[in-house]
Image (cartoon, rainbow, N blue to C red; front, side):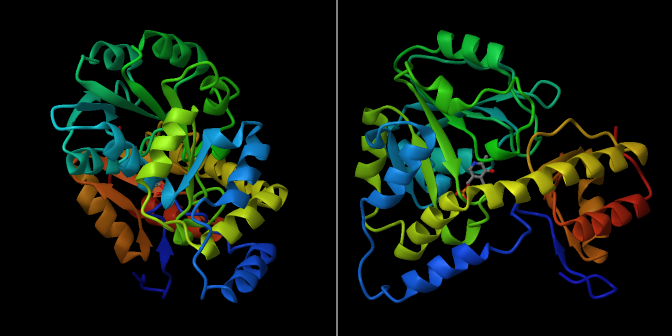
Length: 336
Ligand code: PMP
């Protein structure tokens, strides 16, 4: 998608706008010389690095082909026909697709003012519920649930339900009251945490995600993985990224700063934008959604529209964000 001045700005997939680090591309080049061999299907080095990084035993870690791949595996492992999978809506669009693929019935509870309504979610649990997804921060609203309400919710969830804390955007969180799921899962056998290398670590194209949970959950993920699903290049890049964490988190900090600047600029321009702890902002636009996305596309900026609801706009580089802000400013209406 190219705008009138030849610009093409992709802010539609919550990707990391920065190029891979030199140490990561060097690791990829080295790993490329071994692609005639099968990858380590147990991803032992990566698993050990993750276990050390999070201070958990290696048997609590399972890697997969993106966190979306792990979600599919979890559903395959636990959701038989007649089972229910529960989550807030709107949230990550893969939840209904994967639930239906697994034969489970998706059950949704509406967000309240763009935020998870954990009381309503707890009340919607039945004997048939197998899994609850809590997306924190939530995609596409960027909103969060905080420690007191989340732990109260976890205490109410019965043992037959697995709670998956989807923390794809965790590294962008700056609100100190938002708990790190890796701290919460300890002592709660029916809670697992899902993370990804696709966002803060900038490896979306390589497809690596991981789960941290109790051994029976991690084992279920390992068992349901297509053999060799996390390839050799992906494993090497993920290990190199963990070793370059300081540099990568520096880039995350830039995105966090830009997020603040973009939201402030939008508010100053008269837009209503919920507070966001992720690498995107949410504009509830209702019937204006399609027109807004088209106007931005004409200016060379692609955003993610959800028909009749709103648009999610990723935080890009400063120049990309300026292009978005200028295009949004030129849109004749505001939301609210
Ligand atoms: N969870 C959430 C909330 C997401 O937004 C995404 C990506 N858009 C994912 C999981 C999947 O990420 P990946 O499969 O790239 O790890």
